[in-house]
Image (cartoon, rainbow, N blue to C red; front, side, top):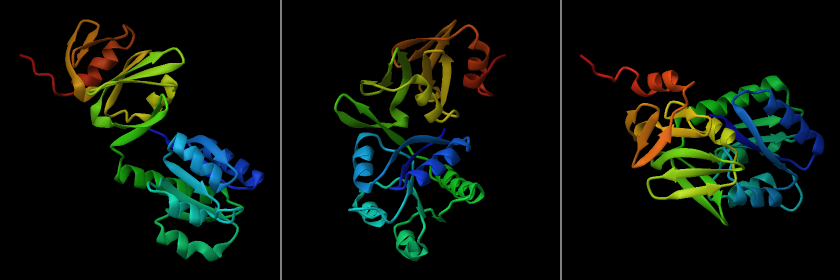
Length: 230
């Protein structure tokens, strides 16, 4: 699972440097960038992220003021040229405080801190944009994901959601210890599997195909050491 990152900074060169750093860290994924806190508020309204790289001194609304407006704060790392706001940042539970120009070594240390925090308190839900609403999806409710050309169908215990997402982005986000890719167009929640017959998996009344090329690997992941036989 990769942490989706948003960079918020009014300096183009600063955004470029952070974007390049993010690209060099395997567990980070660049989700977007904004040149103001106002633009970031709109961005987060459309698509929540996991990790925020946030400048402090920006026009109209500072980074600190912006953080105070967020009801649900992503993991946040402050990036600034001014060291005199550190206390305010840590009072808002920011993970780290990076002084510009940000070296890759220092950036990686902060990123690892975010990764450790993420692993110690893994999320039990995520959000997707479905039609005109942001929908909260609990991992425990997901049955399987189906690729539909430029969209995905997310089947849950309650209903099916259609979202304008790539299958690859969903695959990279879902924790691999809980979800198994069984076909080039299907990912299944391991805990939701009811039975397996031939090249078909049965999940809560649905039939999901298993690729011939993936079947052995899929069976090993599903059964692990839980398959009892004579």
